[in-house]
Length: 393
Ligand SMILES: *Cc1c(COP(=O)(O)O)cnc(C)c1O
Image (cartoon, rainbow, N blue to C red; front, side, top):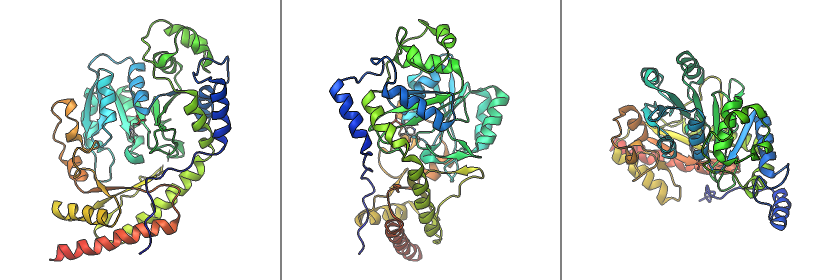
């Protein structure tokens, strides 16, 4: 039996991070605003903005902090209604609650993307929209941006899992008013924790910079026009959600690794997807037109099976050493909307619920070789045979 690859081990941080971390430890210059200029966090912001083709970037403590600051920067009224997809991570509705807004959940289809008819129906009552590109699946951004522009509703992109994905050639995270990314360990760039937000709007950037904790005139160390900053000086609370220089020193060398990780992640995903789609029991939804993905995991649906068969499939995979998560079937899963009890009553969203009850989630890191991907695909296709036999019985 070939040995299954470890799907949880992280890729090593590039060696070049070490000399910078050593320098920072020796000087103890860990706070972004201590050095007069060229602090690692500031350099990261400039490099990230340039890489994405955005005017401004603000590095913060997490993507959740970036989402919270985005809503705050938009200056929404209290109890503003924010549309979010019902298929997302619990951190997304949490950031909405944190910003004193009310999340409104929108149905998602069995291709994991926002259901556009439910979106259009709920948009007239919305003050803002967070499009969470969950697991890097892009919803129909042409339709979403057009509908929101027509209604004058701002769009925040939760691109935590979409770094490197493009839509009609444009980087995900630069389509809406603000884009938010994560440097948590399970994302394309790993600093343990961290996040960054990008925007082309100087006032949104200025407001977010101050609220992230740029007190007094520390904003002068940001690459942003002074007039925008002067408009907001002393007007806003400081939430102190800054990133440390140590995190930036770990992130910056990984920016150069991104094209390889994106290319290999897509190669691995598409290889396993094509193999799984040879079985009638599996379906890997195709990307949308215009979408070029950067996956580090794969999602697939089990077709025409019962709950019992779905659970047996996950158990048999686990028995053979492969952890396949079925979003709706594991207890207390943070991606199943009915577990977001902190929201009070969650609405019944039958379409999203049905998807979550059959959608399988498997990590597929970019560092795997195609041979290792085949070991995983072989095992899954073997389990499909067992599943087919149980269906026939
Ligand atoms: C990871 C993730 C987040 C949260 O990111 P943090 O940096 O851990 O706060 C939000 N949304 C999605 C889609 C994610 O995958």
